[in-house]
Image 1 (cartoon, chains in turn purple, brown):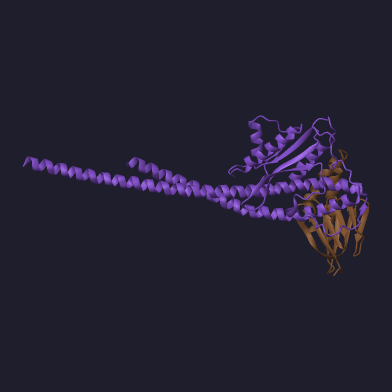
Image 2 (tube, chains in turn yellow, purple):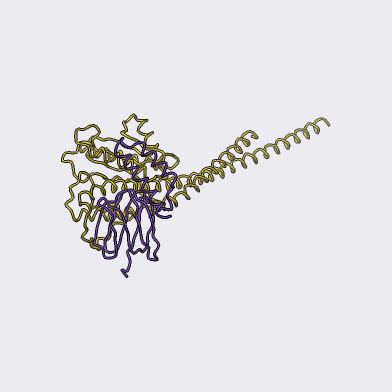
Length: 309
Length: 130
């Protein structure tokens, strides 16, 4: 009996140290979420001004730009999947990968082939393990993406989008799969089409902050010309959309991690309680047995003594 | 109300400077442009250069942008640039080193020239402050 008691105590101890770790991770994630949200907020003015400028150009000039042009017969689609670098974030990565699978299924049924681009080590590992081809992967920034990374990703996507059909590595559509940060409690895997750009769209509504439809856009003068301004604007617009997605994904990842670690801590608590009860029971059982052994021994002695007299 | 310009200088990941100003001078691809109150709505491309913002009190804010846009509409001026920064935030030594390095690469393509321009713009911004 004493052996199993020692075993239970060891188990309680290890669960306790595990709890300490998960608790620490929970707190770290919680403090980083605030930072991630601040970053998202800090990036909002740029996205807002850029959206304003793009819609201004789109309104006043006849937008026909390679980045907005629909291919007549799209054959290949690029999908950028934004996952995390590290695990222990509950279902975060797997749910975004599941969403990506769904999108891939849909694109395949439309007769398009798929080029996969990945951000985050988890997604890379998932594809490598299944031996599926990845065109390009970026890793090492998932919980605090910088604009430079977004610019790099955006540039790579634009480059392959702008290639002519039939050229090596050409894609006709670019989709983006990321996790949208709705609140601390809900994060939602989302798939959006990034390219060709639809300048007038309402989806990213609340967080990017679109210009109020009621304020009338003034008649802009463009320097040097509307086309050239658009030429400069659109790639940055794409990059800022990618950046936005990365920031959202980062906040979602941290929120998911916090939630996962919180429930891990709670589970550890419960386990400790359960093991403590079992250990107490074992201890009590041990005492009871010892007492009954002693009593049994005394009785036996008394019996033997009375028998000899 | 509309005595001054409302200016915001925005980088991709933060707002670098915002406030009221009397004048903004920036360099577009077609040359320097000064914006005063009542300027016609305009949207133009900027080059890597120094931007001057004359604050209401008479102080001048000097910043450096690497490309980007200037948008003017109804006395609201927004300057968007991926990596905008104030002159006080520029690391001069780093900019000098960058300039030397980029100068060495000149002739190898447009990217080096762009880096030279960017580094020069940074150094110029710092010198302007002094």
